[in-house]
Amino acid sequence: MANRNAENREAGGKRIDAATGTETVGHEWDGIEELDTPMPRWWLWTLYLTIVWGIAYVILYPAWPLIDRATVGVLEWSSRGELAEDMRLADLETQTFREQLAAIDVVKLQDNPELLRQAIAGGRAAFQINCSQCHGSGAAGSQTLGYPNLNDDAWLWGGDLKSIHYTIEHGIRQPTENEERQSIMPPFEGVFEAAQLEALVGHVQSLGNDQASHPVGAQLYADNCASCHGPSGQGSRELGAPNLSDAIWLRGGSAAEIRAQILNPKMGVMPGWKERLDEATVKMLTAYVWSLGGGERISEDAADPAVRTDVEP
Ligand code: HEC
Ligand code: HEC
Image (cartoon, rainbow, N blue to C red; front, side, top):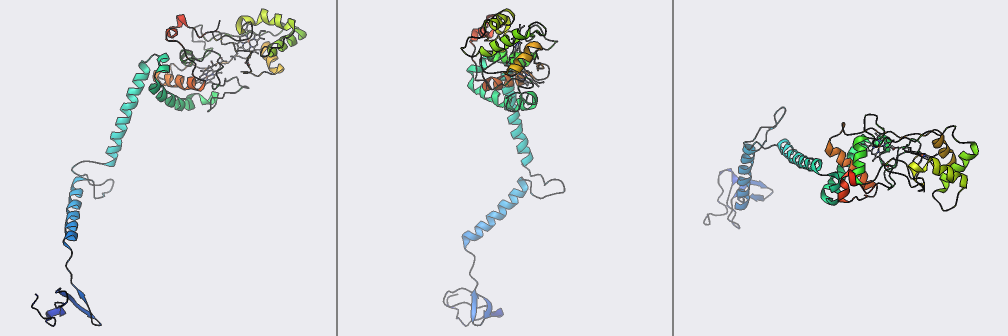
């Protein structure tokens, strides 16, 4: 090539450029010619590689779109398949978690932070579905309707894992259940004279503070109410009788509301969930409600109801 002369044009107007020794493409625009510089090697090889890669890809993976799906590659991989596999693994994890939860004594959850954490998360979701229509989505309850607030640490029937579990499983005042969670406050309509009733209401309102109330009210209380609500109004979890000495009211703390409750008591009723929900879900709900109410602990021995220590005398 080097000995070729710059004027040595081939047919088609191509010639060898003297300065670079490279052939021109043969066109000329106003004396400007284009050199036919060969592609760099690395570029060519990259191009060949991408072609090979493209062919391999089409063979191995789904590539050509058909009417309802793409061609199946020989690897039989698909994004749907990958998702299904992920879901299978997640299901397996949930499955072991549910089995673990169903098998564990509910009281042991208080010492198993990992399981407890998962249970609380599951319970929060189950609560929205099964419980929020009465207790509210934030579990704050309703005083007008007698749905207790589950966020405070004041409990009618007990706030440890064992008691909450029992309440959720068996419900409250269900005719089909045994004698637990059944107690009823008797109506006192016609029992007291007007003045007595006012003294009694005054005494109930004074239970929370140190002021001595009227001795008549105190006496009527001791005779008629202390057996369930306790001598100083602390309540009884065995009977689901509310604490009357805290500032927390299930049915309202005004004189009118207390009077109405004495004369014609309203009794809260809650369905049991043992038949409707599986054991793992009931335990998740238990963990969630327990965590809302401050997580009252119970000693391991007390897991046996015979030696429960959580119930107030
Ligand atoms: C139909 C309405 C209703 C539904 C649904 C309901 N509850 Fe209740 N729940 C009540 C009432 C009413 C009470 C108060 C009963 C009483 O006065 O003793 C109560 C009480 C409770 C208590 C006892 C609180 C304490 O202070 O001891 C717990 C715990 C509880 N509910 C949890 C649940 C959970 C968990 C669910 C969902 C699985 C649920 N409830 C669904 C009406 C309901
Ligand atoms: C047999 C047991 C029993 C006796 C006796 C009893 N109560 Fe009750 N009382 C209850 C129960 C149980 C409740 C809870 C009602 C509910 O869960 O809906 C209650 C609720 C109340 C409430 C509503 C508390 C709140 O937080 O809103 C008041 C007030 C009350 N009682 C006052 C009295 C007074 C005053 C007497 C005596 C004249 C009395 N009770 C006698 C069992 C009893």
